[in-house]
Length: 299
Ligand code: NAP
Image (cartoon, rainbow, N blue to C red; front, side):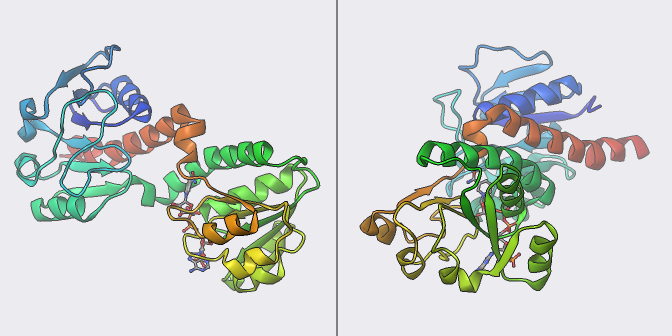
């Protein structure tokens, strides 16, 4: 339980509602900033303007996935107000106050470091990335179905990268009956791909692996699907690039050659915002419980 913890939820989209719901269930006291157009009322929570927050009482601050922009502005879809998180605000919080964000930038890193407050970047955590790979794979399957005229079953799929997303993608497409090859660069990953019953190759040899590809799924956030690689693909190949913007594909050349190449960012928030919110909510509540609530009980 998070009884007696005062948490400020500042900005966000539909995913944040799951976080609010979970923290409410766990009995936290919530101040919601940037939610004045939200009709739903969560018990134990109050809507506030950022200037009305008493930062000296706040045990944790939860920001949206993107955190802030480079001038401290926080996005919200539930309000038209301009919300800016400033260093002076963080300095007023108790020393144990934790700031949560999906990702960060120089501004947010800077104000947290300079005010001595712990910043947890949720999307850099292995647990969040692995849980998030589940809706990411479902979104990838959706795109593969929408953009091909063949079944996934029996198709030739090339997955590039065996990280948190690549592993889930490779395993799931194989379970659906695709013939899956996976590119990696570490020997231990080559061993794992073999253990999974899939065909391994070194990503540096990608050019030799795409001649039969129906679907190429990239998870490497660097340019790996180069013009040379694309030039070897059959014209019906569909490239689904899951890597963060700008992806790892030469989209210009793909278009020139007439190969369908799709950059597909943020699939969890698109195909399963409720699940995506629950993933973040569960991890935040576990961290708050471990770091703040258990600390309070011990002292
Ligand atoms: P990850 O666990 O870090 O995996 C990245 C993979 O890329 C690893 O196999 C890594 O190999 C490989 N790699 C990195 N740099 C490389 C390079 N220069 N050359 C060859 N291989 C390289 O990351 P992840 O969690 O799977 O996420 C992958 C990407 O998808 C990220 O950009 C992430 O932001 C994005 N993502 C997108 C969605 C979406 O909805 N589209 C959802 C979640 C994540 P090593 O292990 O050898 O470094």
